[in-house]
Length: 434
Image (cartoon, rainbow, N blue to C red; front, top):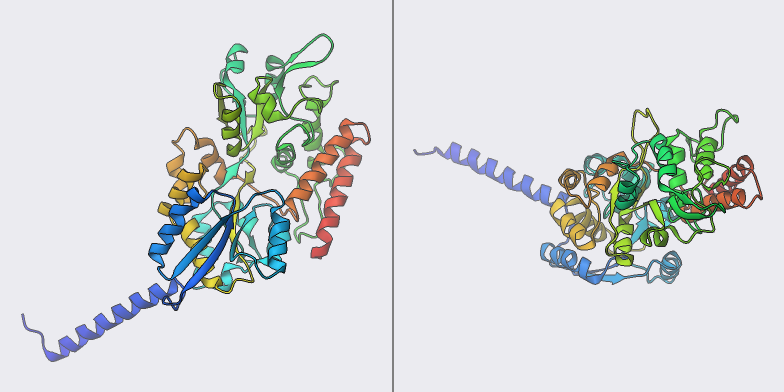
């Protein structure tokens, strides 16, 4: 079939338009000037071995970019980062804790500074709700998660079998009923075996402050005012104060006069106690599983969903994870964000990271795949129901919550006074944001 000159011109024009569209799309998903030689410095907590495949894969995709990955230690990390940035020698990309955006936001260039790379609609399609609560502020995306861990119930299967408890508690009512079946208290009132590590301060209960915050969220406490200017979790009358009710619920397990007494701050660290067969249940993250196996390789334990209030319409779980953010000081910030997007938003790349690091997934597209994985199913399911709140400084808030618990346990204050003081202290942290 022969084409007329007019048809050839039209076909050529269509082909030219297609080529233009392809080029525009290509330019819209990556920075310009691809021939420019760029070196990115990336700080992270994962080992070089874990990150090697990711940096090498990115190099193949972007031959002009070299990624210099530096493994840093968590101890004094924020201080080291601040000093490096102050000296003008900070990294292009660095890790940020999901509870730290308010205190770190002034150091970060949001991805919305480069709308051609990513937008909020795409973000919401990729990640669970908690990630938006943690890493989005004022409609701007400040970081993207590498994974998403959640607080879980970790229990000793042998102790459950011996107590004829068929399955781990699904509600807090069931949890309370299991206490008397699992604990062992001698005639002197000493705890020989704790049913659960709950009710104590962070001195003995690892992730205890997180568990307390989770209980408040599950109980419907409004942690801050809508404008994030002051804390409000201790608001309401004595009989209608969900935050105080959650605080008292938590404390009862360390009250020797309570029928649910099973812990006190004289116990050893909860992870060590559980690994040593001295505690039947603890609350912790997936990251703790490897630590338990290392301490006690033959311990027969399993992981379950965190209990919920009886009759609750919606699950509420608690997240903890790190993400990558781009420094405001980066001289190649568009390429830095391009690298972050490569590592965090592509399922095939994310899977390489998760397998190497041994982490639960953050991407919605991978969560479904991990639901059938016995090592990750609990964490994958809870990722979708995890909820956060505006924590102006996560580490300081943990200390404040733990101190409130300790002040009640040592008799320095009653629960109302202690929680009110904690609310005031957290409000003081938030005042610089007014």
